[in-house]
Amino acid sequence: MVLNNFINNYQYYRENMISFLIKPKILQVETTNDCNSNCEICMRTHLKRPMGSISFEEFKKLPLNDFNEVALHGWGECLLHPDIFKMVSYAKSLGLKTSLCSNGSLLDKRLDELLKSGLDEIAFGIYSLDGKEHILNNIKTLVEEKNNRNIPLTTYIDITMFKDNLEHIPEIIDTGIELGVNGIVLHRLFDIYGVNKEIKYGLTNKEEKAFINGLISKYKNKINIYPPLPHTTPCRILLNCMFIRWDCMQSPCVYLTDESLGDARTSYNELRKRHLLYIKKKVKKNDICKRCIW
Ligand SMILES: C[S@@+](CC[C@H](N)C(=O)[O-])C[C@H]1O[C@@H](n2cnc3c(N)ncnc32)[C@H](O)[C@@H]1O
Ligand code: SF4
Ligand code: SF4
Image (cartoon, rainbow, N blue to C red):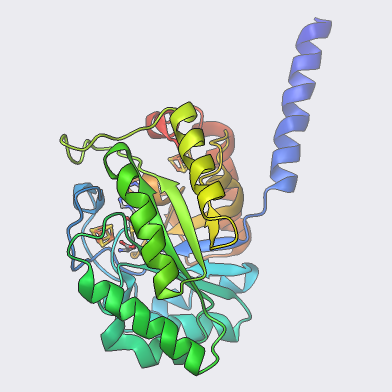
């Protein structure tokens, strides 16, 4: 009896603490899930949802004012969106930090717009250097031009790590240093759908740790390296970030976009209520979350 009361009280206080403490201040908006590439590791074409883009008018209906930061990308190439920099400038006008992740292929076509938009951060997803000459040239021009114009834009190379590309990662980092980017972000490959049977995926924790430690000591004082963080439950993504699909529906995160929590053209409190409910009731039971290494 005493033990039962204790457990019930503990659960009650724990749930209330979660509700009180978790206030995600980063909003990730999948501006489009269309893409001009077809990377062998990518899950984009395995999603069950139709392809589309959010309109600028619908974007403005999201409760942006209640967030500190907006990341305008999901599965897809954000620079394909004709109004992507209108959205960046609009979010900046509300005082939000803005970031993008792009494959870099369209940078040359949109360089001036990008530099005038007020964008704070851009990461370029590069997990292999094969066939990337045009993209590398684009990044070089962007870095030169933002330095010439004195624009405080931070640039990263975002490397997805998996067994097959480990030996090429130092080459990618060396290229990033040559191009003059500000940092290297490393993250784990996570395959939900069995995208490509040929790819060797996971590293053990020990292998990952040894590899990352080697990189950090090799590149000390040369470039900032941001390694993947340990996976937790609930994960750091849910604790810090809410996700909106291009069709304005809320999802728990970028890996769970086939799941809809409801229309996101509502208040922050409503988005947060659904997000917390997901954390409290569903994350532990979700098969994808159980396998997740992010
Ligand atoms: C999904 S892409 C979207 C932005 C842009 N199209 C790009 O490629 O950078 C964002 C990042 O996720 C990486 N990525 C692709 N498939 C992934 C997967 N299955 N697991 C983890 N990261 C993945 C990409 O290489 C890229 O670094
Ligand atoms: S990783 Fe990016 S560029 Fe490659 S297919 Fe996926 S969304 Fe497109
Ligand atoms: S799949 Fe689940 S555990 Fe992984 S990032 Fe998304 S919410 Fe977090």
